[in-house]
Image 1 (cartoon, rainbow, N blue to C red):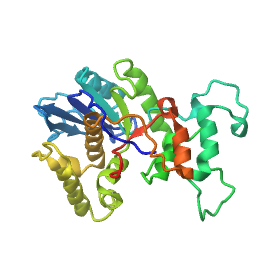
Image 2 (tube, one colour; image 1 turned 60 degrees about the vertical axis):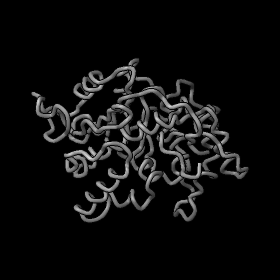
Image 3 (spheres, rainbow, N blue to C red; image 1 turned 30 degrees about the horizontal axis):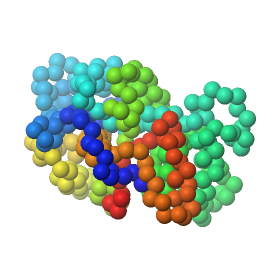
Length: 304
């Protein structure tokens, strides 16, 4: 399976908001807003709090310097939302199947829920764990993982388990925000889940993704600048240091840019390449399970 842009009709959006979601009480949530003006994308703001100096439009007019905790973030998204706005968030927007399930539980081995059945059947194909020191370790735990986690792991796109180590509070916050912003924001329509590492890997390769995280601090900043320069659109703004010096702000910009690609290229449902091997059989069987189980939108492979 690959996520294919194909010849799909572009989605008509003019504003793209990226949310790098951090803890509800901390300083790690950042937002970025891209505006489409006369066909050109412009980065209007990118910041970790209201009134963030150098964060873009209106930063000097903000009377409050509040962090993007729940009430502030919800108010911000409601302020900028209209029918032409899409929000991209880098946090799980659906919970693992066992957590969502309302049925009497027969145990994972006996579970007949379609997505759990798929995970059990194809886990060895997608994630053989060759050379692992603990061969008895279960390949899937549907109370911490979603199917998309397995798919992204197979493609080398650095997924995070939806309720894996350290992810519980973030997933819970994302679930709350999705409810608080409903029905204005609707999953797969104008609210999408993204993952900045996957976007960077697909656009620039694994070395580029590693380079914006590891190394000397100033080298990391410079490599982030180079990534921004390679993104189409008017992103050569006058306040790049605000973006590249904060991994949270930088992540929010990549989220917003992913949303712009998703809309402009008209990405649709994951599509199989029908190559006939065991992996393609597994991915083809995934079918429409992603609609309920959740999907992380990333650029299609270059060969797609």
